[in-house]
Length: 291
Length: 220
Image 1: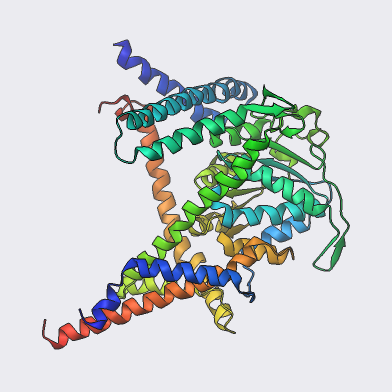
Image 2: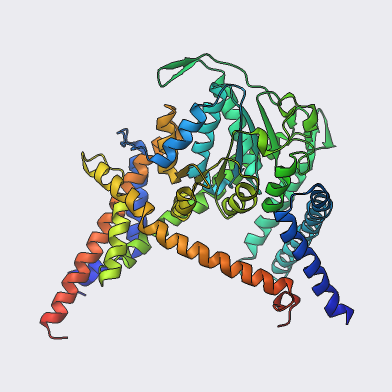
């Protein structure tokens, strides 16, 4: 086998090994990856940023741990932004392992909010967020499409109690909150077709403001809904999460992970170039040989 | 006759009701929806869940019993299943184990929470991250500029990968081009696909509700 043929048929274990090395090395490096803000991410930030204290943001944690790297940073950045601005948050998890992800985020962000911090030049003194008063975690119920429709009638139909078993009528935040009419927007962080259900059964039927945080591979599928104004924003993949972290001035896992993603992309590009050099050189050689 | 006709009648009634209910948010239709769909469907789901767990245990146990290939994985699976179920329902309070999962103070089971945080989350995230290695290998093999269409696909992939770059100027240019790709050609193609899928779904649903499509009965 000549050199060009070898370039075309590299053993995939070499690809795996070099990618693993690059990921580990990139994790140890400290350079900053420039994050450019897209309009679809900026619009989510602007919407939340202009809400008045006391208004309610509904966050749906519709993903499992497998999508932690892409979607969990969005949840952290969003929740912290809401709590710092004294917005109220209602959380559901319509994915089976979602409650664990939401529970973890609530614990971590509640701790983070206790500290004094400065974001985008504004000083936010530390505060304690209280369950039932500052946020309500409704938990998980199966069949997302039915739950989304049911919540449009009354949150109490699918969720008579919150995740912790407290009747939601006894929670101060839920006083006068019947359905989507009382929330400023719904932001679904979704890794699967639950996003479609939010559009068809939620926004389509009840006409609330909807935005998505999606995995990288899903992002491109939802641009038609952005164009038709059925949704007002999209954060797609780790890059979308990094953009949101940058906008909220709250550096976290996504911006850190961009170094790894950048170098991994460059390595993939290098492999593509090697493969194509081998491909063209072999084709040229075959032509010269008259085959 | 009832064996064949009854399921068709039920599918017609419930299918037609769900379609009508969606477009008629009247109090009475909401009441029926709340009573039937929101209560019945999860109950059916619970039976499906029980059936699934039973099937999983039976298949895994048979594999262990007959020492079939990779039977050791089934041991791990069953051990994990019973461990998480146990800690999901039992909490150690003082010296005693009590049957409870959640209280007004939150998730009580220290072990359940830690099993989820330190085994389920890293485990699932690790398995999913392995995809990156296969994508890298597949990109190397598939992205060859063999013809015009393959070259277009390759170019789009490169632009998407280069949209964030510390090289001055390159990131901005690629980001703008990537945004255009997503908002113009991608949007046009996706919109056509979505409309096509939507029409297909409506046609299939109509066929099922009207009893023309009977595949769900197990016979054509």
